[in-house]
Image (cartoon, rainbow, N blue to C red; front, side, top):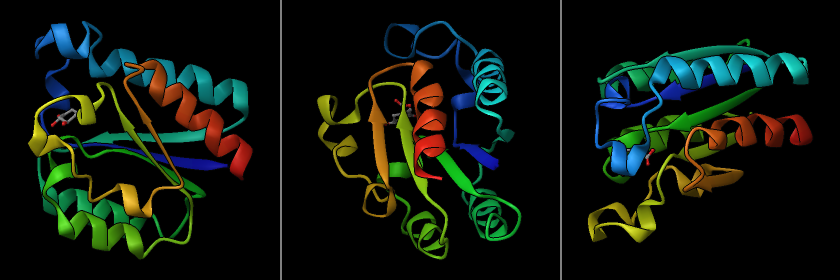
Length: 142
Ligand code: DQA
């Protein structure tokens, strides 16, 4: 079972970025947790981050081949990107939306998600553990 894990803009700054909201774990720490969880579940993961919307769109398009599931934290693009929404609609593999914080309990501009309508499950407010929960959910679904 091969899972693509995508991270959007500014998540490369975790650790330094608003630790009171996102915690002090870095994206590398989260990758480590994902690798550990995936190994236990017998999954192979490909963990990526980009600050560029078009690159994320291309990676999502590419997931049509060779991947069984997708975990995505689209970060700020969650609330703005019709392009990411459209790309996700191309997929016939399950998509799990993850956020470290709970965007719906934050500023109003974070309350809309363009990922949510195409997600099989949305996991919010669990910090880094949310990624592990997303892999477990995919393990159940697949
Ligand atoms: C986030 C929430 C988004 O609103 C924000 O723009 C992020 C991180 C989260 O993981 O909590 O960059 O996706």
